[in-house]
Amino acid sequence: MPFDIGACPSPAYVVDDALLIRNLELLARVQAESGAKILLALKGFAMWDTFPLVSRYLVGTTASGQDEARLGAETFGGEVHCYSPAYTAPEMDVVLRYADHLSFNSPGQWRYFRQTVEASPRRVSCGLRVNPEHSTGEVALYDPCAPGSRLGTRLAQLGPDDLEGLEGLHFHTLCQQNSDALEATLAAFEAKFGGYLGQMRWVNFGGGHHITRPDYDVARLIRLIRDFKARYPHLDIYLEPGEAIALNTGFLVATVLDIVDNDGPIAILDTSATAHMPDVLEMPYRPEIIGAGEPGEKAHTFKLGGTTCLAGDVIGDYSFDAPLQIGDRLMFTDMAHYTMVKTTTFNGIRLPSICRVDAATRAVRTVRSFGYVDYMQRLS
Image (tube, rainbow, N blue to C red):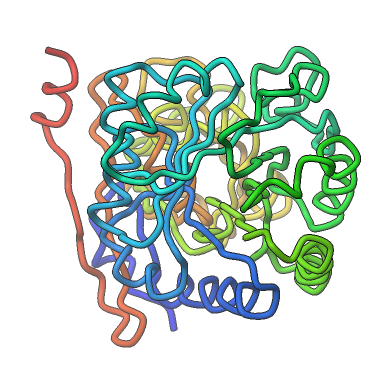
């Protein structure tokens, strides 16, 4: 059942609980049938108002540093995992208060912090991120196995004593990919690092698993994990997708503020590609809009632009059945993951409000709105 777009502020991110539950139920099935444990990667989706719901299905969170680790511990509960390319000493003191698993990027970082970890009053299970050197993605920007990558330790860099005291291996090589990419990566990982698995307690398969995408081969994922568990029954297996949790669960509601013309009509919206949906420019990609088509597909084509001064703050070209009018509202789809976590207040543009749609009643609730103070406190 749809929700009332008119009940949303504009601009606003709107997460639909019914769609979120659909994803979570699938992820719970993967856990039950494979024996793996699935973590929410906060770098992709950290809308902690939803965590009482999400925590019913997943075992915990994975963080990229001290603040995400604390957020996971305080608002989600369960297991807290943490990985960073490098930690500072003050950050490590904070991370050790919250993390249950801690992955280091290099043996050098492990050696530097080993005594600090061992002196911690909490027991923390530590591991090493490794680089299987097997690329499966198409975009170099998102490929941790690209030549010259700083992420993970290659086999050639691993000395005979570098894993002493460590209990896990962690690889993260995928980005928005299907289980065939995991299958190829897993073969490369075992070929290079399989000899070390007998002394480990866990392996983290990282993120990038697009499990809740309609064409994702869930059966193959379950088989891969079960077969791996059969070969290494002593290991706990973790997956940490960020995107799969919130994939296709959210929207960005925006309003047409003005229409200008320059070799065709341009609608200026109260949102921004660079400030509110930066992956549109970074990936890059063209988000879908409910009721809109490709340029020229429908009768009226418009270029959609944002309100910042960046000349390239353009979302894309879309066609509509009727000409856009000032005041019209548009709904961009799949705007929950890698949106709220990446926004900026560039140009003093206010952040979109954050809303949820109740799964049963379909009522819209505004979780948070942002104003001047949110902008001002970032800067001094």
